[in-house]
Length: 210
Image 1 (cartoon, one colour):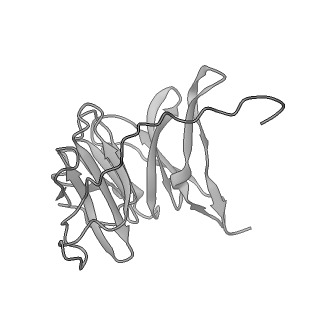
Image 2 (cartoon, rainbow, N blue to C red):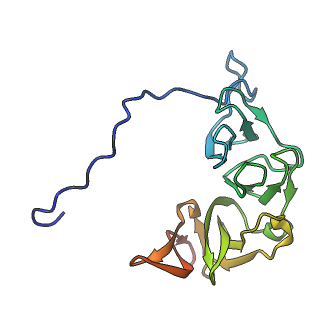
């Protein structure tokens, strides 16, 4: 704040209390109700149908994989077929209806084209370390999906066909370093009100090494 400039207004209050919508009764703890989902990290909902929600997470050695609700959180099911690594650090819905989804794990990125019915490991992301989170952006005027990983910042052309068939590229961490907390990555497609042909990427924190 400088001079007499007013402070930014507070966000509008909804005056609506928070309610728990789950996930519960997943069975990965010793609580009397049969367990909960552990530490939930990413939560995403389909743009064209907000009743479709995906979430997941991990809690030390315990993880329930990807959990899905089709009734706005009233009921949840595991959708882990083909998901060899159930430690979920990031989720992103590619299409509008929640059928095409990618999940970030310590083993790289997994993809489903059938609403979580089955998952395929994207082999190109093997060895990148933890895939933390996803952001959509632009490279050379074309939509791309960015993913923050331990090895650096991954990206792939954002199309609704299988992303496993596309070329995944990696902007590597500086030599002798590793990317940490790349879930803080931010993407901007505009500068001074002008649309950019390539997104400005910020929020990468490189640690270790020199």
